[in-house]
Length: 430
Image 1 (cartoon, helix red, strand yellow):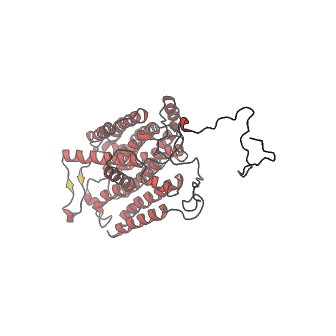
Image 2: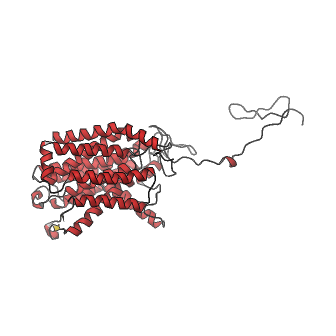
Image 3: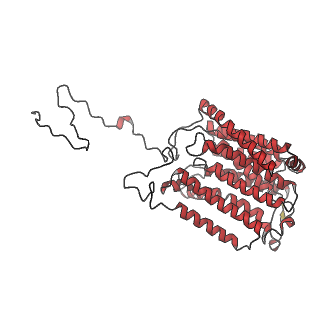
């Protein structure tokens, strides 16, 4: 336990200290684009925060490989997780850096994601089988080709799900941190009943990811001083996907006594920790394709945009999504630990949905609520700079300007403080 805490603290400290240096670098090279219509911030903010996160990730992984218990487990594991994540993480970081700095076509960026996932597979960081209950035919082993395809698909979907949810200050880093915490807790529960190298590998990857996100959040929470950009969103999505891949145990019989549906848990946990980004990803693809647009076309219809539109401030919207992700992910982890009937899983789903609906409902009272604000007056935001898209800038040629009064002519009409016109006592003759 102390080793996991140590590697998490190392990753957090390195990330935290690197962010100011990366911020200066991003400003110097101009990696702080103008505010777009769909953005919720109102001032240009530097990106490339993912460079600092990659530094924290590398130092955390190298530290984990040198520790007594974790280092031995990583060395004995069939997959060379440390080297795989450093190389694949470097590739996805370079891809995100070029996209944040110069801009990149969506399909070229997708190619970079597939290449990074291929690096993980080449280092044997892959799904070996699909865990299924005995009543469903038992666990299905995957051959090399099918294992490669499914692993790359899982990694690419996870990367884009995290990238899609990265729309508010601190949202992506917090959601991924909660997901990593749930994955780490689940791997610790498994490690108590089985000793397999990939379970320790999962715990180590999750611990380093937790530290990386926590080290970046103080600089990224509202009002953000820096954004992680695609550089960071794709990186933490890749690392989260690798922890999901390695959480699948080699021997399903080892967890038969943990739950009445234990074999399904390695499949249910990734769905639980990624449910919020996946919902946002799926709804965005359906919404854009139904409008005849590309699935990669940006818009302002994500879940966090809707929370802002109904009257919640940026911090409140982020905390709502934190609470929902925490409830859902750790609900599944606790049920796996206690051993509950399968009917409890739909109950948790219904409860999580109910909490999201209640917390996301418009605030009927209190300042800042969409229903409490007078008509024609924007709701107040009490937690920092104003959010929402910037108002359109009227071209100077369209601005009506009154010509100055001619010399000796009547001066401009005066008005009182209330806006009423002042009638002169001795009006001038026309």
